Length: 121
Image (tube, rainbow, N blue to C red; front, top):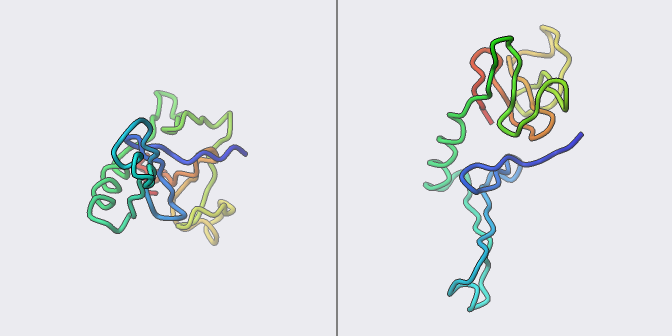
């Protein structure tokens, strides 16, 4: 299984750490002073909430045959999509275990609402 964190507007989206991260390359006054060139934006900050809202409005592509393509490029015949719980853990597709209607992209770990194709996390 290949695990790649999703990228949105130049930020790496880390659901586990609940933050957006971006490496700012190039010359800047900050780099001259020796301060970090890595930008961290927590999900619970005002800017993080704005980015998170936009990020979660995205949808996967569903073609005319109902085949999914995730935003990371994954398709069912490659890394695939698997039923998951609200935390993104794989579950058996039984009524007892699979109560969320969510699938997880097995490449980037995005959680997808089966009914709408929306990215929910």
